Image (cartoon, rainbow, N blue to C red; front, side, top):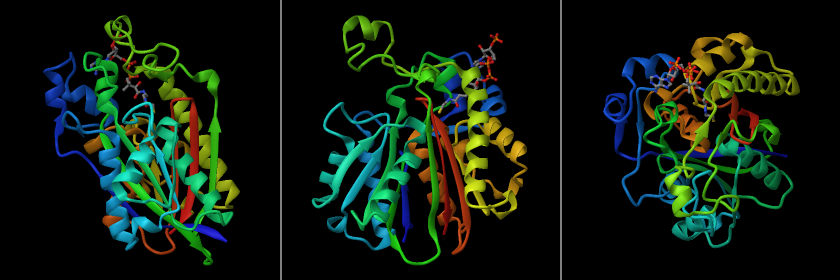
Length: 325
Ligand code: COA
């Protein structure tokens, strides 16, 4: 038995932050950002809007697309590194909004790889027969952890959410494989040092701006290319597929140069990639489900399409999934 994705949904805030807006905030330029990252604009929430709000909207869109009732959900997984609050979980807050009272609800932390980690866990729950109707949400308000005075990071991130519904399938399609990897030795490539138990909230912590993302951009770039290529090859080999068998490649949208480098190394054709980083930037755990939902709505996915998804993120974590639509 396989698990298959039944429907997708997504949500982004209305407010657009263009590169020209960032030019007024830090010493940067539209030209530099576009050339080095491929990002032209990103979405940011208005004050008071949290990850559960975007996640709920994305989940509702997926439920509507699949014709499902939230009351029938038995698993609600949320991947996020920007939860509404340390506790309770964002999954429980989304459960409350949806009135998905039967669902097991919990969060999962794997940063930008979070959605593929969630997909893998949901796949196992569904294939084991423990759950029949699963919802996986990737949702982020990255603007809440971005240091708007740091030009090395603030240009990269955006807010958004994506969601998928998963159920068992007897057919020869669905989630064909997932592969997950972690390497805690590289924990400090991308991190938010403050606000947890190591460095709890305090006036000194805030004054030192430790509540914001710190990143070794250059090193992260190299590790990203290496791990994405490796996990894509691992996924193809596990399914006995060649690169030409991939109908759609959905990479984590972190930097268009990272994606191009990976595609070049793999020999993947340019017309097979799904990119929306120009409009949304890096939305962390939301990036892949947001891109998948766009691809579905744009008609780039048909029954039988083989989709290869790859991600990397803080942790370090990296992951892949192959789906036959
Ligand atoms: N605008 C203008 N100049 C900038 C800039 C900005 N927004 N950010 C950095 N620079 C400057 C640097 O200060 C540096 O100047 P110097 O040469 O005078 O010291 C120069 O540009 C080159 O910096 P560098 O960090 O080497 O640039 P880069 O080509 O590596 O691009 C990133 C920087 C962050 C875009 C790139 O490293 C990257 O995308 N890394 C991966 C990050 C990522 O994916 N993180 C998320 C993990 S999920």
